[in-house]
Every structure is written in structure tokens, then in C-alpha cells.
Image 1 (spheres, rainbow, N blue to C red):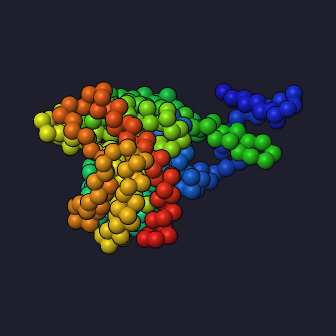
Image 2 (image 1 turned 45 degrees about the vertical axis):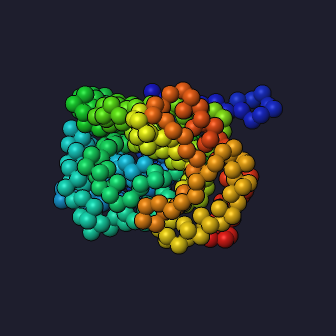
Image 3 (image 1 turned 60 degrees about the horizontal axis):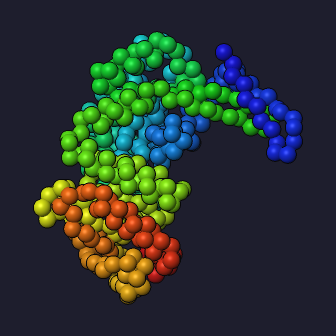
Length: 361
């Protein structure tokens, strides 16, 4: 059944009608593949909420033992997705094929896929430059992602048999979902409306296996991120995580703001809010830390409390405020939100991003 859109130029009274029509009337399936390869955001995680996670294609027409996998995707949170176009195959054929591809991807692992042309380090670099990449987006994180990749079927119309089989598999904890499109065009533009089927169930599959501690972290970050986004709309698309930390992008690779809990609900536990420098070159992090420390007094005024400047790990550095928090209660979360807002404003007020680019990076 066709769908109709209406559009009107502001200030006028006339409406223009745009009717959906089958994509294949004017395009081939390879057109669809090339389009999604160039614009993976259209099938990225989060598209259903209007907030797609930055995503890159790491494999296209990937040669496997039993055929060619259409697309292998990596997103900024380290999730890996095996994506297959339905084309003109039956539901049994396409689902059987994509499950087989997912199994082969897992068995090949990082090195086997690299032999097939997957550039993992290049993909990590691209996502890091987006400012939205997870702090620990590295090869070790991707190895974990490959142990349980998400499975996606893409079509301009997903038939009922495919939906039914995918739902059956989700009930049995297989992370498979579908995206279908409504396609519109007029004399100047093409319009694509993606409808996601089953992504919420897939998200639940991934979170149900979390420990009570991981669920507690997710709840804390969800509340803090929601409040931060309300205070600073449009700053971040970051979503909640099961980790003990969550990073906040500032528009430059290798540096970000971060919340971190050291010892959740434990005696001696504390809450950290700060600015992290995580360039692969230790000297660059140290130089940046020294420049920041030269602005200590101004930074402490802007944040409103004592700040700690230190190297940490093998090559990283950080500037942070801390609060003793044997229990993460409402007072601790209120402090953490206020400190993060102040750090974000500090980055803006001191023009830290440009200073780092000009002086150090």
C-alpha cells in the first residue's frame, strides 16, 4: 500500500503531494547497496530514536565461504553488525544466509577478517575523530563485539514471514532485527523513511545478561545523561552504558570529558568528573597537561573546586574533581551533574579545543 507525504513551502497555502513507490521501479538492488555503503547512518543503531550512533562500513561485498556478506558495520560504541539486503530471496533463504554469515564472521575473528580486507585500525581512527567514540574503542573491545555481532536484514519491504522468523529468533536471544524503508521522490529529491523492527528487543537481549552492578551503572548514567542533555541540548548523543565510566565528546579526537565511579557503593568509593587526555603519544598528553596546569587557578574558579592534575596509565593524563561517594545517592549525582556542566563550560570558556590543536596536537 502506498504512503502519501505532503509538503508546503512556508508562507504559502498550496500543498505538494509525494507518494511512495517501489524503489525497484527506478533502481537496482546494487543501487541500494551503494547508497547504504556511502550513508551507513541510515541503518545505524539509534536511527529509530532519530539519534544514530556514528557508524562506518568495515566490509562491503565481503567474501566468505558460502557467499558475499553485503555489509559489515562498526559503530562508535564498538558494536559490530552483520547486515544483509533481502533482495528477491525468500525469508528462509535470507535469514539462513545471514545467520551463516554471522557465524563465519565470529569464527574468522579479527585477523581472519583483516585478511579479507577489513581495516580495523582505520575504522577506529575515523570513529575517534567523530568525537563520539567510546573511550576503550580499541582492538580488544572489537574482539568482544565479534563474539556476539548484531544481525540486520535490510529491505524496502520486509515480508511477514521474515518478521515472524526474526521475532522467533529474538525470543530465543538471537540479536536479529530488520529495517525497511518507505521511498519517496519528486522532481528534485529522493526521500527515505527507515522503520526499525525489533531493535528494542535486541537492546533488551544485550542488557539482560548484565550483572546487578552493570545495571546499576546503566541506571546512574541514564539519569545523568538525561539531565545533562536537558541542560545542554545538542551537545552529545552519548547513551547509557554498563561500564563504570561514561565519556562526553568535546569535538577533538583523543580528548573528552568523563564521569567515572571508583568503587560503586563501597566504603572508600569516590566519584570522578574530569577532562581526559588520551592521545596515543604520551608526550602530547604530557604537554597538554602542562598547558592546562598553567591555567590551574582559572580552571578551579570556573569549576568551583580543587582540581587534580596527573599522568595516569601508561601514557594518558587527566584533570579532575573528586568527591567521596561510598553511596551514589541523589546528592552525589547532583554534584556529578553540576561538575560536568562546569567542566563543559570550562572547555568552552578557555577555548581548550583550539588551544590543544594549535599548541600540542
